[in-house]
Image (cartoon, rainbow, N blue to C red; front, side):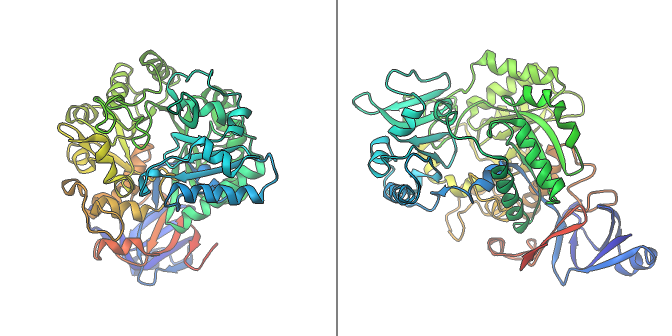
Amino acid sequence: MGTLWKGGTIYTMKREHEAVEAVYTEGGTIVETGGADELEAKYRGRIVEVTDLKGGVMLPGFVDSHMHLIGHGETFLKLQLGGCSSREDVLEAVKKQASALPKGMWIIGEGWNENEWSKGDLPERRLLDAVAPDHPVLLRRVCRHVIAVNTAALRAARVDEDTPSPAGGVLETDEKGRLNGILKEQAQDLVLRVLPGPTDEYLEAALTAAIEVCWAKGLTGGHTEDLSYYGSCRRTMHAFHTVIHGRKKHFRAHLLVHHLALDEWLAEGKGEAILSPLLEFGAMKLFADGALGGRTALLSRPYADDPSTTGVAVHAEHELEQLIAKARGLGMAVAAHAIGDGAADLVLTYLEKHPCPNGKRDRLIHGQILRPELIERMKRMPVAADIQPSFVASDFPWVMERIGDPKDLLVYAWKTMLSRGVPCAGGSDAPIEKVSPLEGIHAAVTRTQPYRNTVYGAEERLRMYEAVSLYTKGSAYACGHESDRGVIEKGYAADFTILGSDPFLENPDALLGNIVRMTVVNGNVVYEAGGSK
């Protein structure tokens, strides 16, 4: 018994502009596509529901290829600083939170971005001490590669001026050699490890909130990396199982396995007890470098606005190779965070030395700064570029101050990668950027900030079909599901995103409105504009 979907424009995404009149689904799978009358006659005795699209536009379900699903849900549970326009705004938000919380309770905030302030002054230790002297404070920068903490937080972590910066991390100091409360990369762990652990209820609440927001944005699934951040890989897996299976919050979650969670994941039987068409595990995740905002992305040359550094290698080269070799020994692909070209070079070197297992493919996550020869190497390998188009809207123009004259560097070069034959998938890196795939598509097509006219790298703009493909066929390919997800075709998953506007016919700015009408996962309507199901 199944459902007939008709009454709108249905783009299969198999080829540009290819459309069908109707789709018949059963048991979460597309049985057939074709003419509405033809399918209605053929399956008359089996159709139990007819869904009228009411002139809407049906596409294969959008999937975010790189996100932190629980982290996204946490944004609804913590102090949010993304809307702050100055350091003073951040301090005022912390002060207000301190007045509302019992003394001694941690104040956790996230999302601050000094590059969006008229003055780029950081929320340093002494200032946080002044507004919250009786609370440990930890504020994550938007990139999650930098935190700002106060004295109470440092004291709780037993970190002082005699504490050495850990390998792959930086404990910043002021002009007098005193800790200023700014911790970068691996140094963050010195404080993060003493944070009170989240409860099961907290994880489940965050995950539930995240999935419901994703539905409203048209997402039917996401490739997410959460297993190493919440004290126990087992507890995190249980939260996914409880919410997706137990509470029937249908969402196709493809979980990357952080190398720090790998041994526990193996001890838990690789999560096989909770596997389903809605929940699976993928590549081993590792970080090769940091982020451009904090000048910790590893470049092949010094930063233009700070020639004293080329960035940070999170792992020594032999450690990076050992991690990749470990993944290969377990028959796993590797998903490597590499923003700078220096990091990408290292990652590709060891992926080449230790080839990917047959039938699997690696990922280069972000790949914002590359060189032509790196792209040529990528196209010869089973590797997908996991890109975040929204970074164009959020990082320009300040990112060019970091890089200077690009010369031989390719900067956020999505078009170049696609034209050279490198498969690309589209994600948001939520909660670092907004989870909306439509905003990502807009950024990929226009290379502008929303409702602004300045174009950054016009030659790297994508056609609408290419941009939509990032979140449909591209995401399916990145996780090895190109044969059963990502297009509307017989035998593929009945995951659909239905819009109220046609992205192929209207101005791209239409994507910035609330145009998601319906989201369908596994044949079930999980969201309708005006209320979730």
